[in-house]
Length: 396
Ligand SMILES: [Fe+2]
Image (cartoon, rainbow, N blue to C red; front, side, top):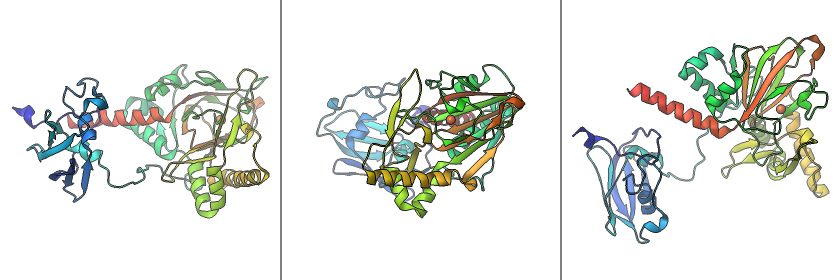
């Protein structure tokens, strides 16, 4: 009867390692209280437990999505009593009486609330003087070896910029790689675009001129989260990529120029694209924060800003703070500058890492760079599923 010792399933497909075991369970005003082996205690509302009950009557065993509606639970539902099973699972008995429920201890610990705390960030903030090159991985090895592929994705998540190198000059390769991470997010530049010089450019990107630091698509309600630039060939001189960790800029401003930091978080700029065939515009502050004050995104692009319709006082505050941000974004100590070499795939968080380039001499050779966008969610999902599958491989 080996299966009796198996932990119950959870309402998802994540792995929930049991790092802390429950040592005591009691009922407090109808809620479940668990004390853990590290001495911490957590409380669980009866509705939360009931709607996440992994029993097949309440959770579809294949989709692992709940089949209950809130009205299927009695309004006076309470935990009547609870116990720790020999395998560490938590058994819950209900009032009014309904089938007992059994919960996975790792899952209960994973969803426990221990006070209102900021989510733990894995972000590594950098300035160019400390981090002159992006974290870099061998492209062909990364495409063969899932561990290296995962390291590349994790570096992209944590540094906001990462590079694969030595990739072959192959049609369709960029799309294949991006689709291994997640779905492509199209834009008014198409499913994939080529950075080339156009006679009638609909963006400064399609010239040989220098580009100051910016994010792409500030004109969207939610700007694209990731950008992939694949250099398939480059024999021109100049055109080096310049990247800046805008989260680092924001944190330095918060500490050293707090009045500008505040204005950058509070004042909404409008950004609009300049195109004969599309007309996008969206608003947002240069620095986005969550409720804990953690910086979560940047909307910065000088040439796509629309006129600021605001009082003279607010305009003054907005322009001075934008200038303070720019002074850091353009300062060499913040900038990571490097050449695009044939076979390089630069990937970056478009809502964190500002990108730009030096001008290049188009007559001196050819330059062939393809670009694709996707979103942060796709990166995070790819990391979690890969971690899950690699953990499973290790366990087997
Ligand atoms: Fe760009």
